[in-house]
Image 1 (tube, one colour):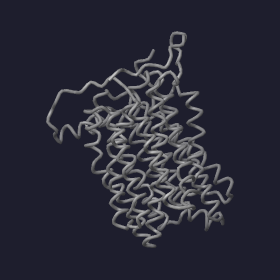
Image 2 (cartoon, one colour):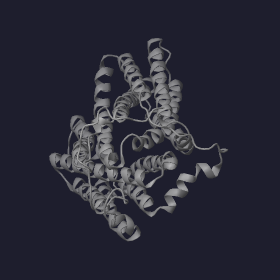
Image 3 (cartoon, helix red, strand yellow):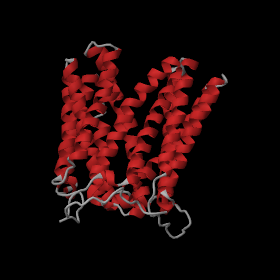
Image 4 (tube, one colour):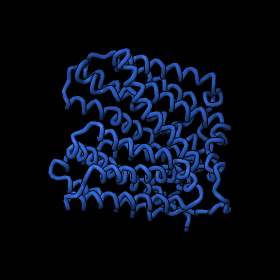
Length: 419
């Protein structure tokens, strides 16, 4: 395939960062992730709502999430291997095409009145399996489409698209579902189809690695690589423990109803606040990417995430709680952009898929276990103490990482090779 060429070649001063608009394949990838992410959010909302319509069972509603998580976890390492061996753009569009098939199957089942609990759970399994292959391929694709000096800006702009999908997808899906579930499924078919077309347009110079038989050691190469690189291990594990301890979002229904004495509309605002804060920060970082003292900035961002989690836990004002959650989202976005950029720059290209797969396991595990930890601690000590202790724990983790990973704390630039 041809290499990714800029749309134009405007004269820029030596060392100038340039513009992401010059890199056509990156923009195609961004559009594909935005449309595909919105489609996935709408599908998840529609499947959950339809499952509850059919069974009125909270257990079955929980099974929908579990059936998506299990294959994503079990297939993550093979998914990373596939991303390192085969053309990542091709893997991504094939995965997106499968999502289109899921949306089409749901549309046909709803129109034909043969959708069922078993069908919804089966298609949830398919979506989880697709995620295991799609996430590593897409994450490892970005560094191939832009130069290293633009990578942090590209990561921030990509994160803005993801957050826009997270905010807009459920809102659009809920509005369309009010008309008819078929409208939601039909819209998902169109969005996913468009995302597939954009992914098929992505081009980069793929160099197939030498053929080697698949082995357990090859699948675990990403784990060994992370363990051997202190900076990468510190960045990934910092996010794991921060989300594990600071996951107060799972307790939002309790805070909204029993502590803030708010209703479902206010609960929706509270749920959207972290994503809104993250979206605003990602847009800022697209224009002003972190350039110096990035290790210190990463640790401060995680510390702020913990501090404002404590503010949220102690707040009795709805608007203060809303602002605190927005700040946690913004701080988390700073952490995400720095961490993902560092990991991509520290990882050789032939390992990026497997390292991204391990990273996705960490993210998935921290989100799921963080919700469980928050719920379990809230059951024992109450929701306020759970949020406050989680926030304090997150701040202590940020301080502890200064001692455990001094190379990460002292890191000055994204690319250690830069002057």
